[in-house]
Image (cartoon, rainbow over all chains, first blue to last red; front, side, top):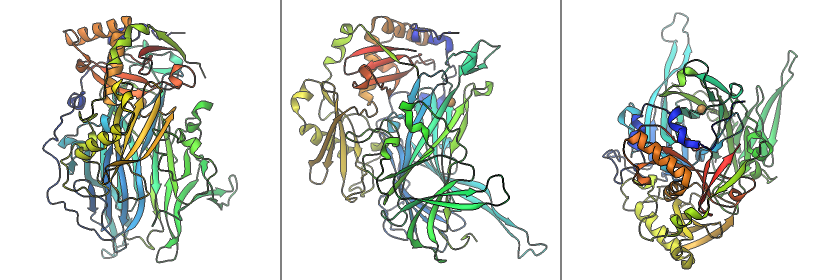
Length: 410
Length: 222
Ligand SMILES: [Cu+2]
């Protein structure tokens, strides 16, 4: 067994150097300019009241974006010291419809990074607001930087729909979709994280985190790593990025929200039977094939008198399960009753409050649920991960379910 | 799970380094990423705190504290965060994080900015919010003051930069909280540091933990 070079600690660090200084890092190195760079507020963005009530924030914190198909997203951003980019008061307005309150607040809630040999085990939040990377125009193509650390842009998302006209050009329906992206980047040690919030013109929300920058350069035994570099000398240690997001849904209003879990029984047979479980109290849940959840306000109905709801799909997690003293790793989704002091999934920063999301689940009745989503990526390094490491993404999807009675897209 | 053993190394040697860290009200506290934009004349309810509000909240929160602790350098304002609670959403409120290294107590004081006073105070042990900028610097100073690790850090810097390390200001630092179920770091404010050198390399600091409460360095064994 091949011991890591123990107490020589970082004296030998130069040996597993990560070369190639990175431009973004150089810009962010340590001190950041005290004065804002000359790219602050977009001109002319005033505190107008968009359809459906006044915005909670003004320029440059208000994002109010109409997309070509008539969908509109509105929200307020804030770069918080601890959580970094936080989106508040997220409102979706489908084409021709009324504004829908979706999220009161949404932010990263932790990035837990345990290495495969057992140590180290990092909790990467970290004052994310202080780790934010200054963005260049190239980091924000087609969009505008809001201040130094936040980019708001739109981009193509491929086909929104396609329906053949069977020879009738008039009847043919084809449309390219667009999406709004609000993003920021963080330098956490050798890693850089890109945190994206993607709002589709179909009403979908995709929170995702990309890890890039550099590998740790940690040497390990063949059993815990992958040989990078020449031959079989340097085994880079595999590790997980267990990312938690906190989503405080306020569908319609802050109270009355409910969370349901959907399963489809009948594995191994021809038929499937829908099984709905309404969470009356705080709950931890794990992923299953076909399983999904939705947050709804049972009294907020669409034109078909179906409850307006937001579906959560979380199926591409590596589902890391850690030791007993990391019980927060042992579920993929937590639903907890709102408490102002519960902000992070682990190492919660507020005193006289529980410390991690697994402990927030304590049997309380749910009237104002907060959803915590855990998506894990097991990173086994490859040769291609040499500097600059290609970004690897992890995230999940939130979809409108019966927010509108029909597809609102033209 | 493997146990994490803490080795206290040379506690006395570094004790003087941080003893003189004082809270200086009015120095604006730690720089704040969210305060980078020009202050709106009157911020909307959901706007981030303005630099002026952050400064005022810090002053009000530290005035309300036991001044003896601040003067003795035992308590320190970490940062000010906007109170994003859902009750009374229209109010402009700030949460000032104050840590007392003598008692390992975190106090969060909620300042009502319109009324100019502390309206809520919550204190407890065993809660460690992320390290502040100033704490990252202090952690690096502790490592530099450690006989062997400090020497290693200086040598690595010299190799990377081609000139001697003058102070921690020459280093790019990023701190994360380290906690352990047992041992000093179950209660103390312990910080793990990433240190980037001018040539783009990082020191291997994965086993090094700066204990800001005990003012010493622990080396983790696994
Ligand atoms: Cu990785």
